[in-house]
Length: 109
Image (cartoon, rainbow, N blue to C red; front, side, top):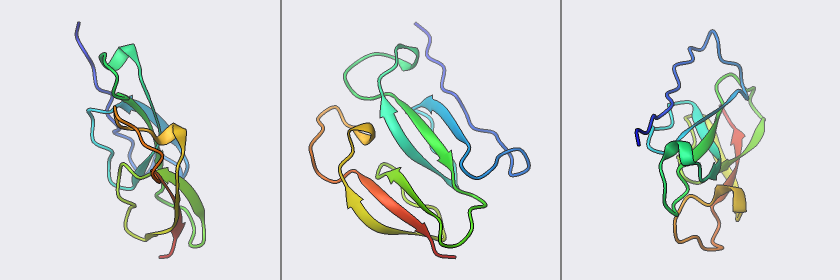
């Protein structure tokens, strides 16, 4: 079975703040984007580890904007972690726990 990883090639001219893309977990989250949800998909392989993610473009948001993001990627430059909590939508491990796995991020610069 061949597995295809979706790649994000949106340029800043075609992507808008808050745009989302679904992709296989094997592909790296690009700069300026964050993971916002994880799940299993037969299209990205098999097994018990979540292998599909939704990512969100944070480029272009104004200072003061707050968003929630999975703790599976570091926040982009200019974004600060203001709180952490657990979310079942951000379980990206085969052995999930109820430890905080989600951040509230705030655009600070």
